[in-house]
Image 1 (cartoon, rainbow, N blue to C red):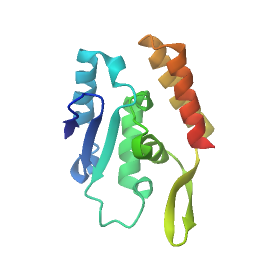
Image 2 (image 1 turned 90 degrees about the vertical axis):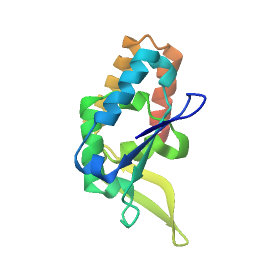
Image 3 (image 1 turned 45 degrees about the horizontal axis):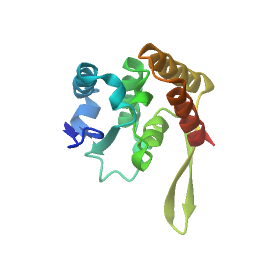
Image 4 (image 1 turned 45 degrees about the vertical axis):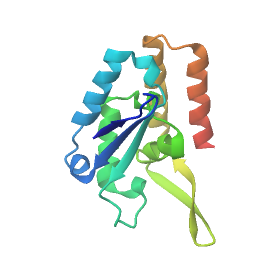
Length: 158
């Protein structure tokens, strides 16, 4: 399900459990086709994914195997998906965390801190970055936009 904001600057995609478990990318396919028809560049950094149906699961989103498998399939099909992910509420960070092999969270007085230490496979990280940059060059994004993406990714990994 896709909800478009009135100003068309933010796109909330609610992914329910049945889509995730079926590894169904049809809604993402439709959304990216809409983006292509309306000018792909204006959709940079504006997808927010919301996961529905796992509220009773005590694990973090990025720890649930079905969700990890879903986002692996997304990035296998759309290796440049990072281009579209918003950083609102660390949306991009937790989606990338789904692709990580190991995580470390910090506890603060019984609460979990949103700061994650992600341990990427260096080849995976390099592939995501290189394919996203190649996509950005293909659609003629500016060097400044490409640099911003690199800085954003680096800041997530520090």
